[in-house]
Image 1 (cartoon, rainbow, N blue to C red):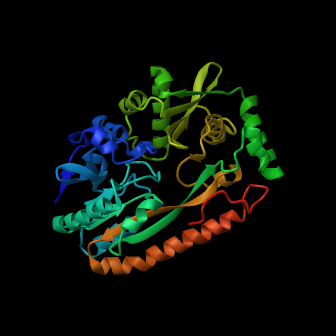
Image 2 (cartoon, one colour):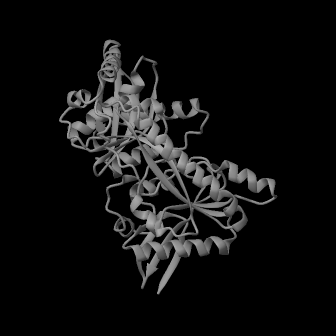
Image 3 (spheres, rainbow, N blue to C red):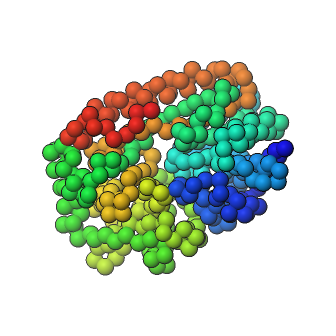
Length: 382
């Protein structure tokens, strides 16, 4: 006998029960990260995020769960559905609230339907579909899914896809010079010139983990993050208390890359480390120096991966400028249930066109690979 329970806070579940449902390689779905967002006031109704996590119990034991939220807007999701909301509004219908399975503010692929087995995953999804209908919600969404989870989504779901740019070390480069040697001569020359610009400007770099970061380091990084968010016209939802929480609860997974000049910290990038992957999340700077963004957000991250033996670096969403710096396109996946069959039927061809467009775009980008051997594509083409 299974039972679906809806949780208004992740604190309603013991951390060990939640974390037993995933392998720990993706820090964003850990109890520490997700509960920290709630406890440190990064998620508020006024921001459009209301926790409504789904937990499936079998004989009183947690067998599946999903980080899920009622959304009163589509901000902070990175899978854009504003046109769908506008279509609902034009027909006098409410698109919000909708139900979203995701990691807030994080366009990072990872497990979303945490489960002990495929049956539990499918059972949880079926229960969430039924709950969506019962509550009269417009839709249920699951963003940035792992490919291994896709078979659990049946024909009720619409498929969407997009492209991100990731770096991989499937060639076993030993150091940064070996990585550079794999690039075309022009790209290699340009990359070296960018790094030299930063060095000549007098910037130096240090990498600190959460348990090595001082209060000043965390405060500086938060100030950089806030400045970047406000420059983009966004409200900086993540609090300094959340940065402190990451440093104490995930001390070796939090990675700060900090740039200094004339004795002052002038830029920083906040990353999370999990399994074989480094995830770049936020950056900011108090000074503008040529090449500073590329060095802080990309080259220092690649260098860290090479030193630490990490295979993948995901520096964040979007950005064709990453291609010339060794990052190649990979597909992302999301699934969407639209409760109104008429809207689902109307949206389906658009979703198919979008995914086909993403596939074509990826193939086009790969024709401009920065690597000397463009046939040695280190990324899966699925």
